[in-house]
Length: 200
Ligand SMILES: CCCCCCCC(=O)SCCNC(=O)CCNC(=O)[C@H](O)C(C)(C)COP(=O)(O)OP(=O)(O)OC[C@H]1O[C@@H](n2cnc3c(N)ncnc32)[C@H](O)[C@@H]1OP(=O)(O)O
Image (cartoon, rainbow, N blue to C red; front, side):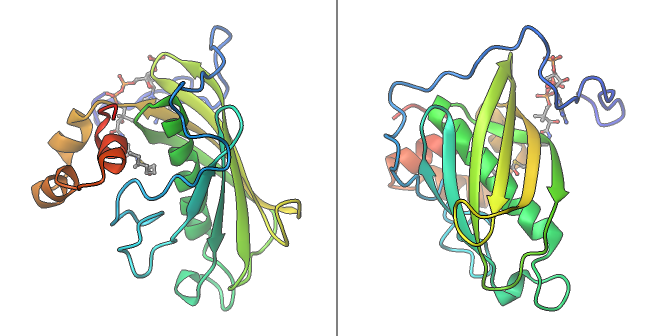
């Protein structure tokens, strides 16, 4: 797609087309309850190497779903004492991004639409839940919620998304060489696979 010729809104719809199919869990996907770990140490969403990142921790769920937690820190404020909306959207984006690994697919966010239902104070644990609802070619349709006060608490944020499956070239051609080289040299084989689409 060229930047000068963006897709029409019909092409970026969050509603799966009628011939979309159900997502298929990869046979080697981690068992429900298994922590997924960071896909990249410097990822703003999940990496341990980002001091002000979200440090989001995700676990495999049933089917093609994950659960995750993110604790809102003072560095994540927008209004005094409240989480910034963009940060909450990042937490939803990261959780939705991680669920694609259960299909052993590498995908990037194409479209993400967030509803903000309740304010989220600093120190709150946001309990996230994301699942893939449908797949159509390279398009992956998914949905996520973020609850406060516990995993069964009220929904504070929710999002619907379309992720687009990409090949390793997406990162190699568009990323900075120094980070790409470092990620490729990562001794953790699973993390390397998740970043670069090579089945371990
Ligand atoms: C590795 C895990 C990382 C996880 C981190 C958390 C997730 C992220 O934040 S990823 C970072 C944010 N996202 C990005 O940077 C993506 C930037 N965008 C791009 O690189 C490109 O536009 C990209 C790859 C999405 C699509 O480009 P391209 O590969 O040329 O696809 P293209 O052939 O135009 O479209 C393929 C299909 O996707 C659809 N599509 C393309 N863009 C969108 C969009 N924005 N929304 C919905 N659908 C779209 C097209 O309509 C087309 O559908 P169909 O097959 O039915 O015709």
